[in-house]
Image (tube, rainbow, N blue to C red; front, side, top):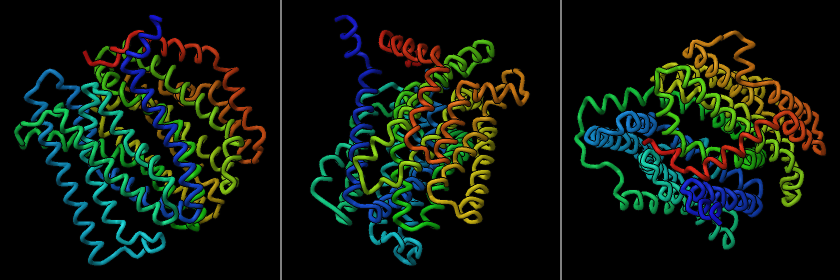
Length: 483
């Protein structure tokens, strides 16, 4: 009973429970939406989501910059208020730019959008983008303050609204209703953030603080924008060079595979300020131990969940006959996003050590690799849409390698090729990955369970560590607090 009491009163457990319930709802609604719309209209809806994603990326790193500055100036209330005013001003400028894009569209139109029948939907997309920018900024403040209820509400409201509306609509009408839920969900979240009065309003808009937020943010913007553009560029290539139906298949595959990453991001999202705080230290021996501990749990967890997802693909696809052809592309998508987690710990360490410029270069270089691979795969080789995601796999692999390389160099640890590779991808992780690639390329769908079996056999100790960490979180939820 004592254990159950601790569990149900644990703020981390309650937050993660709401997130995982939401992700389950999101997973189910995605499947239902995909079925009700069919591949063609789902392709149109996927393109709308792609446009929303582009607008989210164009944030100039303001939210990320504010996050770092709030952590680093946690005890200086006046300074945090001034930084908040600067961040609000910069986000306001971004929203004005979005409004001008909408005016340009009204006056001149954008011919490519005709392929996806965007029409006047674009104006709603712009309104959604404006609300998302402010909500993203406010959510970073609430994350630093460990206000998990508001974060959970912001992340859950849209999937819940979607769940209630999808039974009553279909085809293009359903697309309009889904877009409207995005608009109202973001509006309700923004009103909640403001009503709870945890945002440090009332600061002065000072040139020096605004310059600090922008200068730190511009490198974090390049870092985050280039990193997320690796996925977005691949989706864009498919949207341009492949039929609408195949783009629908592609996005369906990525959506299912990405559910696993969302599960992990839910936890990394709330621990990020504490990890950043801990890694902002000159005691590199202690930092090294912290990174090792983080990676032991997080990286192993991500690989385990992704292999579980790959193993269950044949079962899941059996419920959606229209998308039977996507089993291989879902497995490829899951394998492609796997190396993404292998940078965790080292990328955060570089950020905590004010190496924003360095990680922005790493991210930009990885994006260039991705674009070159897309040209090769899509334009030169004309591969099936199923294999376009291999460009993401290689790009994430390069990204992780460079983060580990420069992180180890900062820690004064060996940066020899083999040392870095084994830190990034130990043999116990590498073997099941190569096995998964062989099975997906060969389309041995009935053997998708094998990488999971091999991974568990090679990582028993890591799996034990994962459960030990879960117990620690249950018994000591305060471990995520800054103080």
